[in-house]
Image (cartoon, rainbow, N blue to C red; front, side, top):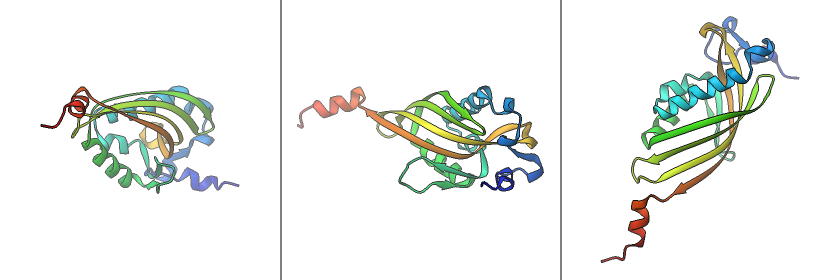
Length: 171
């Protein structure tokens, strides 16, 4: 079976302050807590704040965004990934709905859109994420994610400017 001691020690809080949500009362990992966490994730993305995004994750979190690419491991890798990504985006919008909860894991359906800084091209994302949480008792019992798995669909839409450039004849 799963080594529950190992699971309780994930993240940057000392082991005595970190409790795996599976051992907590059900009301500590409920839809409201997950929605609050996702709202903070979305707000950090909209604000283009890589530090705030990284702080939502345990120090040794695993972040799997693309199924066939290596996962990001650790808060530094997650922070650096978001720093690079956010430099390329502007006008970010985000919303999320909690779809299911079981133990310490949530499935969340979310949408995001943003414009590219370099091309003004609009990108829309539609995704389902499975997020496993721990409760960080040193931070007032807030949730931190120690695993993020994502299934995502991406659509890039032309802006009026790129459509016009595409249809204008070369001189």
